[in-house]
Image (cartoon, rainbow, N blue to C red; front, side):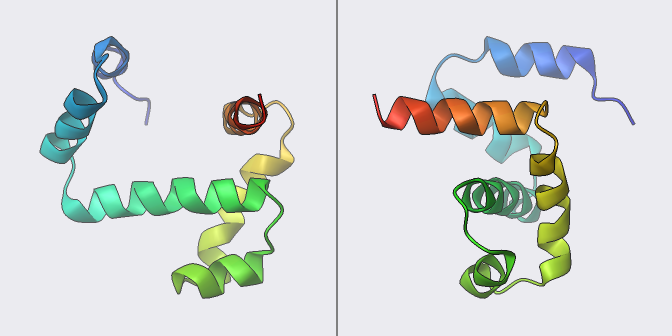
Length: 93
């Protein structure tokens, strides 16, 4: 299923962090927000070199949940990989 282009345009038009947080709070359920946040955290941990087993222990999740993130990061041209590389380099500047 493709993401609605109008939704994407709406998201990128939101400039204030508080407004973006409110938008996600209003459009997503607490469970969806938790899943999204967890996915991002485990992607960051994988990218930093943390092992899948350590991530599973850290968040109390199965290794199966981490596998998708691992597959994404193995693709050098994935947007997630590029964003995490950019975030990492901006931390050290």
